[in-house]
Image (cartoon, rainbow, N blue to C red; front, side, top):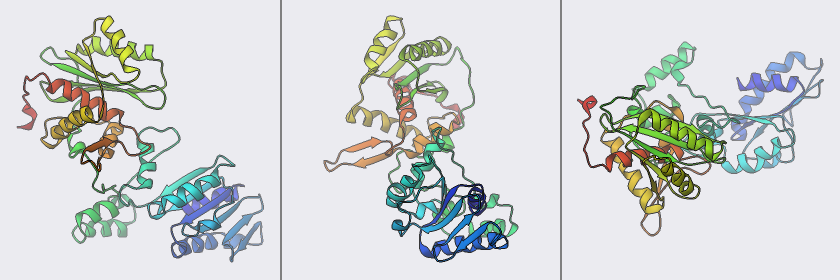
Length: 366
C-alpha cells in the first residue's frame, strides 16, 4: 500500500520520501519501488540506484531513506513522507529530521506500523482518535487481512506466542508500558443510550475549555451507575457554553452540577448559580485531583460504573497516566500533547454522585 501511494504521488509531480527505521529495513522498499517502475525506465522514468531515487518526467521524484541516517533526510523538502514501521523510528528522527522536510510544501505524512508500546507513534495515532482535524487514525488486526495465509498465521499465533506479544503484533493493540491508570475501560463501555427517568438521580461533572482544550459535560445516573450523557465541544464562546449547560440541566434535572472552578470556571459558576442551577465549584490541584481520579479508578476496577461507547472518551481514559514524583506523591495527567477533559468531567460527575453518601444498587452486575 505504501509503495503504491509513494509511486503514484511521485508520478503525479510530488516529492516523496519513503522511510524505514534502518538501512537494512529499507532494502525491501527499494526493491519494490525499483521493480514497479522498471518497465518505464527510459520512457519518462529514471533510476539512480546509488542514491536510491526515482525521478519522473513530470518533475516528481521518490527517495528511499533510512531513519538511522537522518543526515540523508535533512535539507530536503517533500510533499509526502511515508514512514514504514514508524514505531521503530526514533522520536528524534521524526521530530527533528522528518517533520521539518514537510514544512516547505505543507506536506502530509503517513505513518504505518505495528505498535510498540505507547511511544511517540502512539501519541500521534491518538491525535486522530481524539478528533484532531489534521489527523486520521486507523487500526486493524492481522486476522482482517484477506490473504488466507496471514489469516491462518494469525490464528496459529494465538496459541504460540505470549498474550502481550499476540495483542501487539497480531491484534495491533497499543500495550501500555506501565503508567496507565484505568483498567476495564472498554469492558465498561456498555451503557445504553438513555432518556430521563423519574426514578433516576442525576449528577453532572463539568470541565471547562475554550480553544486549546474542550469543554466536557458528563451526566451519571447514581441509581443505575451509568453514564447517560456526554457532551464535548470547543471553539465556542462562554455564553454559548453556559446556554448548552442550561439546556442539559433542563433535560436531566441533576441534583448537583460539580464544575471545575479554576481560571474561567469561577465566573461561569457564579453566572449559573445566578440562574438558579445547583452548581458547586471544584478547585483542581494535585491533592483534589488525586481524590477524584482514584475514586473513578476504583469504580472501574470494581465494575461499579458503565460508560457510553464514545471512542474519544475511551481513548483519553486509556491514555491517562500516573507518575510518582521524587517526593513520593503521585501526579495524574494526560500524556504530553493529549487531552484529559473527558477524564476530568467523568471523574467530577462520579465524585458528585458518590459524595451523596446514598449508596448504589447496581442490578446489572448480577
